[in-house]
Length: 337
Image 1 (cartoon, rainbow, N blue to C red):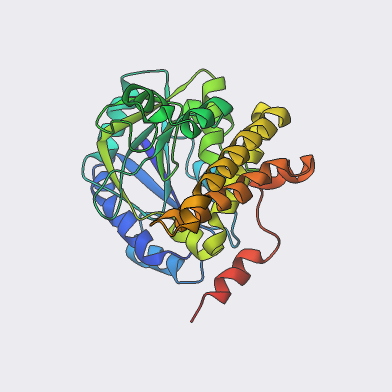
Image 2: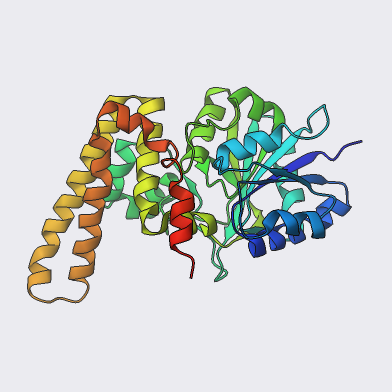
């Protein structure tokens, strides 16, 4: 009998992190709880050779190019013998499962047939809980954040505002970060897998939206602890451009799934809110008040980021797509010593 969970780990030039990730799966592999597939997106740091040498039981797929996260997971999910296992886990290479994490995720999902995906508690390198569950981006959520309503304890908890929600509570959530997600195989298939147009960023928002449309829910299980280094491959690929690419991908998702008009309204609220807060920082900045200059710079950057939501329709819809040909490799080479 095949293992019930297929863990698909997506790798791109993060050999040491990938090694730790696969080491963390050793107990579940030995117990027959999971099988592992590494989809390597054209790494040049020896990652494929390390997998082949150290983890012969792990299936290795060398894509030969950077497919992006979602397309690589789709490829790994189709790998192996038929029939496909009942559960598929999508994983970044920069995660490490603590003992019992996969079992806790399975137990949570098996209790509720509506559960199409379940997310663990992500643990940052400093031991804190990462803010990894959210409501879907929308005008109402932005207004609550800009107006300060989200700071009210019961509102912040309901809206899953960073610093205002209780990470100890297991719950249904609209969407969760894709660093590690366990999918019910039937739900993953019903949603059509990851949308390969969301090449990088917002693919987790998108698949959660389509799971909901297919009648499934996303759950958060704090008893499942997964350590997460965070953005290891993205830092190499995009450097300081990460935030701009992320916001652009969110607007592409919103335009595609919720309509151009809603995306424009979302951009208007966010750019106007950031501009007003930038203006309010100016008196303090002129008087040299501590922190005013840095806050002003932050809000000014927000204006620029969210102004991407006013891009022409074609460029807006393409915002979740991949970088131009060779861009990732050129950026990667430019950062080498």
